[in-house]
Image 1: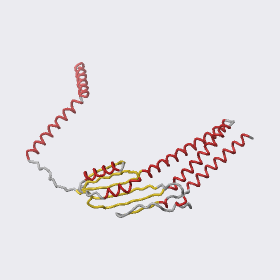
Image 2 (image 1 turned 180 degrees about the vertical axis):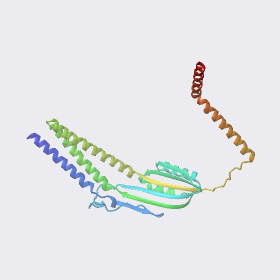
Image 3 (image 1 turned 135 degrees about the horizontal axis):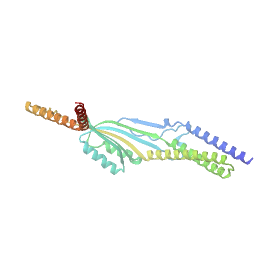
Length: 280
């Protein structure tokens, strides 16, 4: 009877965890995204949350992921990069990646930087008032409300940790090896799910705390046509003689490399001559 109660407890715990995962899985957070585009764009902060819950009813602090894309032409690439370094130092930002390449008539630099969310607006505003900017081509600012995701993940974590505690109690009461293996497998699965949700929560926290700005700057450069050097008759003759000499040396080296073949050929010739001499 006791064993039957343990098995039933495990079964109902498993069903409860799965139902909780399934309910949370259908929460749609895409409608919380806010996207603003254009040189005069300004970030927006508040929007209704999905899943039948208004943001005004949420006691927790709002979690906003903010990002920006800017593209502009500069007078001097080096001075503009120095200006970006100064702003990163001022606002405690970091360069996530940087790529630079040149085209026919321009030099391009792509940077992805991250700055503290509280300094996001100040950084973007100071970046775009630089006197070294010739023309602003693009400015896109987006704000994504992930408060609902934080609430869902935290609720899911709390439920799974409670289930974990109950499974550990059941593990202590298990009387057979089969019951122990079953409970340990449930604990292992719960532990993996808890670690996954904690990693997701940590990632979202990082995105909220440090805003991302993608910067594309370019500089128009002057190009000069340089004709190829013409070669005279004698220089062509000298190159031909040099190439012929290299060919002779290559053939000689190739013959030397075949010394085992020549040695075998000499031995065979000597044997053949010796046999002909004996017959005569």
